[in-house]
Image (cartoon, rainbow, N blue to C red):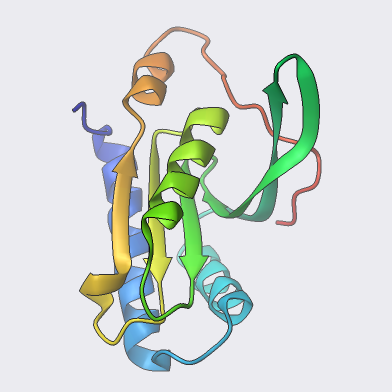
Length: 151
């Protein structure tokens, strides 16, 4: 599987480090929306651009579905972060992220679950190799996002 470029990897490390510190400092027990707000604020504070609740349109059988999906956090217009606050992540959470990466053609994403006792048990990294290939093409801008975005 192709790996993201060094810049993307550096941003990914910042996201993971920030999420780790948030998990350590706040601990499990808050609602997902609280962790989303806190993580967004902390990532913004270290200089990353964070868009919240980014919508993605979809087309199924030639039927256009505006705002069919909603991404929790989109960091620097390239890394998707799905925030959870549940006892245990399920396979559907990774599938959801995979769908967002594929439809938005984003190269990298994380499921971050603040509900686990140990941070390492609550984080999952997924790579979209197709988006990495597309981003290497000259002039490629494959993002298909709806208009409803909160920065």
